[in-house]
Image 1 (spheres, rainbow, N blue to C red):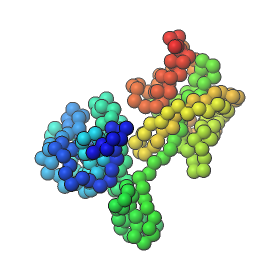
Image 2 (cartoon, helix red, strand yellow; image 1 turned 45 degrees about the horizontal axis):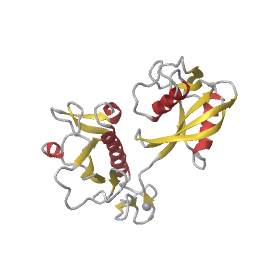
Image 3 (tube, rainbow, N blue to C red; image 1 turned 90 degrees about the vertical axis):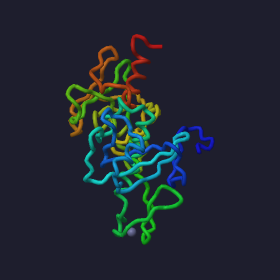
Image 4 (cartoon, protein in one colour; image 1 turned 120 degrees about the horizontal axis):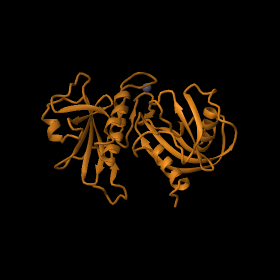
Length: 280
Ligand SMILES: [Zn+2]
């Protein structure tokens, strides 16, 4: 089933005839996952027992020996006693990371399938492809794939200082590294240089790839970078979404998002490891 893949999850789009003894099912009410009252993934048997008729279902692929499916719950679905529906942001603590990542795949496939039932150009119903995860309009013949939005996120360093900002939509007092979407025609490195300049009027150099993370809110691929301060003075007046930003010394960092779940936190951790008192 896993077919010798070096990865534990092998994506697929056509369900096997035999789903095996214990498949997994990620059922969503819009973007909220159906979970048990203690925020665990219910068994397929427990979901089946609810007798819900799913609006659509999708095969996701195989997690080692376990076949995985997703389902779109009807809009009028109300979770019965013992169940709840939750945004995936609320489930980082209760779902193990690999299961959470699978749920992140699932919500994007469900959402793509829901929103691509009709052709965006001519409006007639689309048809699923048998060869890959796409839907096509029989007239326009243009395949429609699940959307991924690449975004860059960057730790800008100036000696033992790091550039952190506060978006207007952040919780009070919280700072984070800078981030923004990559524009059509732009490399990720160019997006780093442009976004940092747009948001703070700081010019950076020596942009280096750090790592990436799928971020299903709603369909980002976060591309992490480090960069070095080159010139400029922090000024956030040119960016409506940026409330404030500044360079912070490693020994005097502001409050950042709690936990260790996102690449913004991995970038911070890496910075502290290289510049903090207990540096290697
Ligand atoms: Zn069409």
